[in-house]
Length: 109
Image (cartoon, rainbow, N blue to C red):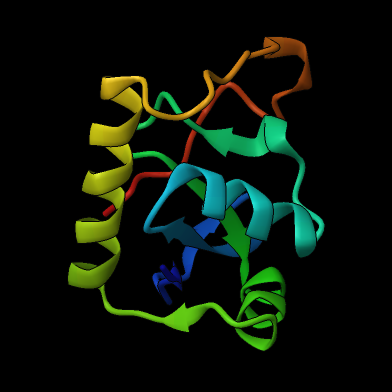
């Protein structure tokens, strides 16, 4: 199992953003918690499940063991997460809209 982070550097709200995904939802959420991300920041309703991370958080993720990945690798892992969510094999995510940082999500490519 692995956690992947791209280097997309999408400019939004004055910062540069990347995407964090993993081979499984449990692994993704556990890793995200270890690097200080809130579960409410999980983009479960986006085209593909992921966490949006700033370039500073990307560096923390790499230090913590995430793999620097290209678009293709991130998309393959993100598709697996989407299938996992659809199959209900992981715990369901309860979404609290008030806890979301924004109603907008960054595009996943």
